[in-house]
Image (cartoon, rainbow, N blue to C red; front, side, top):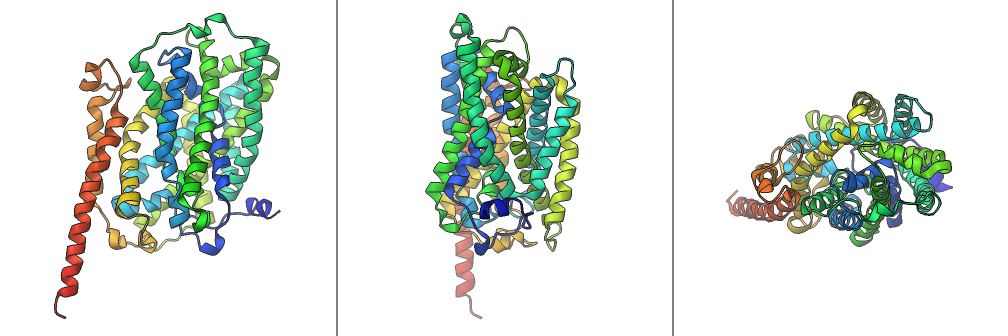
Length: 470
């Protein structure tokens, strides 16, 4: 009863630190929120990219998805411990690395990401519902998905968690039923195991896509763990988030591989899913479309927190509340809705370019944030300084972090292989995209070295002040 009352209560907090007496929840809540959030149509479509875009055979596609998901989820789940420890949203905590004003570079990019994912979800949901009625437009379904998402985002954190728990069970059951129907009732063509040929570029492209799916959640994680009691612990938070996100994404992605291998030519994967599930297609598409409202709400909620963080940086005396979050959610919904309605006809090509773009800008931020939290500061931050005009001990700009972030992006460019741009080194090795591996491998030690030097200079300066005569 207590959880139900919390879920239906309008959340008052936004970007302020959560008081200890307001903390609640258990680590297993992090499993359901990440498992339930991933069980929707966009995850299925992303899995289908392994065989429709990267042209891999069945076994290689499954291996690529599993490997990429398990690697990427490590970095995603490492952010989970930051919420219970610090009690603030992820982008507020980013001020501890980049400075109060310097963090706006990352915050602005992440806002674009949230709006992009929201628009993608709306297109998927609209197409799914439209496929149930021949000749119907996707627009009504897109609008319905936007309405369901914005209502949950306005009520806030606890309602989103509750919604995810429900959909984790319902969507999980429907996923298993859909897979069983496709395999044993409809039947699969014998050629499903012999279609496509293995290529290293396709395999690494699939690994990168699956890893990015996990890495793209890194800016979300603390937003949904910051209400957890501080004694929740790092390890329980890590493993609950890791397995929730990994299993919740790998299972629907495998279904996307199966559906994609039954397609001929450039078809619509959602329509193909409806064709394969036959008599239960309305149940499958409606549940997965409604389930996307969880992801929609999460994107809106996190996006609103980022916009409020951006605004509070410029007006440090402002302490945004529920009204500001509500108005921001409505504004972001309008932007995403317009994007979804305008791009629905060329969605698949735009989506592939979009997720590859995210890969190049999120990887160095993740490396910097985790190195700073775990290796340099060991989770010890002055939380009050995050909301000060001058950034407190973190200042307005942390040039080593900003420079390392730009360095991480530039370092990846020669290894990029995407429809928009292919770097010279990627072209030389046959179009294999190794950019995210390069970004993580080199950004982390460079920032650690710069951070250590910066700490040493700061400690020396403080020691000099302490020894100076008064």
